Length: 156
Length: 156
DNA sequence: GATTGCATGTAAGGGGTTACATGATTTT
DNA sequence: AAAATCATGTAACCCCTTACATGCAATC
Image 1: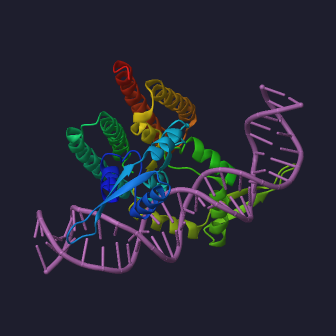
Image 2: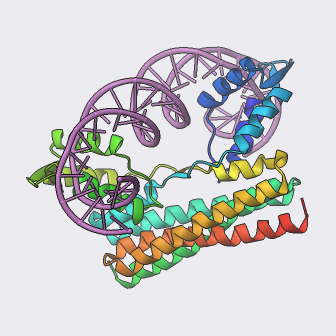
């Protein structure tokens, strides 16, 4: 794939795995190339930079296997939304509900976009990732509904 | 709270929010003190460094409110486990199942420890965070059971 | 006798994002 | 006319973790 394609793929199907910004992506690809872990094929185009398609090499595959066999590091998460909700003693009830509604909108948009990917996915591993993300979003939506109810009841 | 207490609190009740290592925690506390956003009370002890209890100031509360009213930044997540599963075309079925079993163990341990916190929690906001984390862990456990089943069926 | 808990902190280094720079083509 | 898509890349900077340093008390 090209750097551009990798970014799109990570942002859609792989949301639950992590993120990829160009500032990390391109330098990483260059490093992998220098290490001969990948090789590149340049496809010239008109009106835009040549598309560079990267492909893993035998050496890259060996390194990958070594990495795969080591136990994964713990998840890193950072959810500012949750922190604001927790520290939100100084917010009014309406501000709290605004926070929650906005979050719900994001989750719902995420679900819709993942459902589109889900119908299009062919690789079973891709389906795993999509179903993982969907399960997380749906669990959060249920939790959001519960706390929204609590806040309205308590008439903050 | 003291830096030490904050760390414990973040690691248990606030797992779903983020992490706090001493290398970030103490310098941040010093910075907040310099900004007069917090004040400190030193409580001498025998046989160990004085315990420093931090408390938010009026100025700190103002700054906090300003921050609370800005929309939260998007979540940052990084799940190496998921990435290894996705890239695990080069792993044997047993290696895949090993990955999954280890993950299940971590999730189950997380659930147990959160359930203990849940019974002990008094603040309703703390309960929100604990229930959020529990919902995520439980959703993941169900998803894990499904893909485990798929892998065994396919007799990789 | 060894490990865990309590309690502070620093320094080096790794990892990542954001913002910038460029520019044609297609869609709204 | 404006915005999004395609497509590459760099530089500055921020944030954060890891590893280290110190040391007593209590538990296993």
